[in-house]
Amino acid sequence: MNKTIAIQGAEGSNHHKVARDFYGTSIALKECMSFDALVAGLLDGSATVGVMAIENTIAGSIIPNYALIDSNNLHIIGEEYLNIHHHLMCLKGQKIESIKEVWSHPMALLQCKEFFKKYPHIKLVEDVDTADVAKRIFNENLVGIGAIAPKIAAEIFDLEIIEDEIQTIKENATRFVIVQTDAPDNKNKEINKASLKFQLNHKRGSLAAILNVLSDCKMSLTKIQSLPVIETPWKYSFFVDVTFENYKEYEKAKVILEIMAEEFKVLGTYKNGRK
Image (cartoon, rainbow, N blue to C red; front, side, top):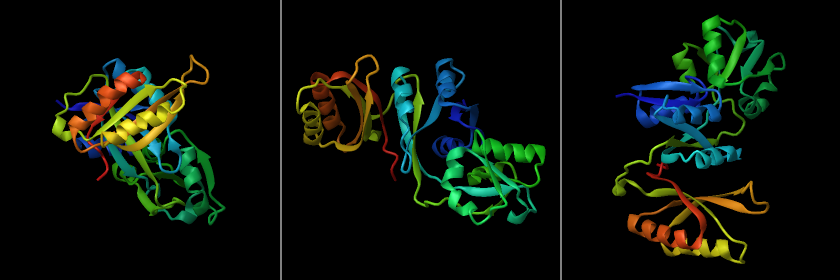
């Protein structure tokens, strides 16, 4: 049976590309205009799994999404890394001199700001979603309007890319996680990464002690992120990602951390998405 994948954004977005890269093209999409709506789709059963951006090499961690995964007890079952490319596209047969306005998400506009300094006649207009703009240009036959969107949007909506790779910073990547409500039935041999959450007391060296355990158990720490515990001022939850070669070493670390840490929780065990 085909999976229904909840994505943030519309068909043709980067979230859609990640869904296709991870699951192939035989999928049904549930388009969500917010991450809250994406999670709601998982909880009400209208989607099987969700694709959720979690961090970016320029913007950093998407902190609210850590809280969404944790508070709704979602399970991370996989991850995907995507290099972000911005392309200027429009209806076929136009040149950049004839484009009066370019619509896109505020972040995309910001990342392409330097490029548009060469074209002061173009007005930049903020919109909700990059791919949704491309879809509207196609559906409404909008002449003189351009979109900044991924290449997949041009393919789907039959638009012409008139300028390639217009982002200022060329090395820009986003990490996405694949989430679902049920705990996965992963095979140990396929798992070499885990996402963990824990709280610590205020004793000196408590975080260092945890990190030492991870090191002793041959875990490589790839990410650490702290979030305040809302109910308790000046107390923090730590979200960490670790990679490992031996699953038994991971299980050993987990047993020790369950004893040492407060509110210990496994958010997911899965295959490392870094190629």
